[in-house]
Image 1 (spheres, helix red, strand yellow):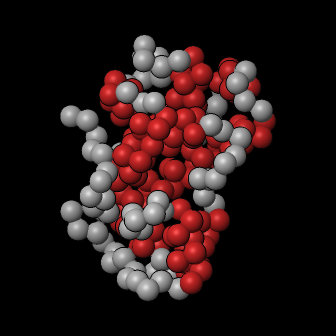
Image 2 (cartoon, helix red, strand yellow):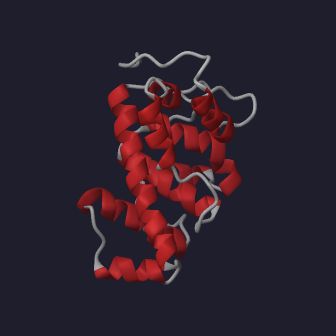
Length: 181
């Protein structure tokens, strides 16, 4: 796969290098998505200002569940694969759950009740861009209003990330997972 836009090359401007140093694990090169956006410092800054990878109202597992389901629904194997490779083990996704994130439903037996509510939220937002009263109220059983705002921003942000990675035609990172066959 050949990327449609060539990535920026180091050295990066100091403000971009600062962001990259904050978000990438030590010794791991910056993601192609990030270096592609680094071509334009203004757009790079806007993208990173909208990111939600900091400690917020959600657990790491909740965050990664929303990211993995949203990117799977959008068919962004690039972004899904990065998150599965870096976080699946940390958040306790087993092989059945990893497969279900791509091909399953929120009602699959491998999910807890709270996981099911998050996955149903992702599916509803993906297919209808809204939540029913029942879905909204089910989220309120687990989350504060601030956490629900974060969930909606997270799902929307990773839909945008999926648009970028798919339209850029980004090849997978060398360590990324692939969609299960």
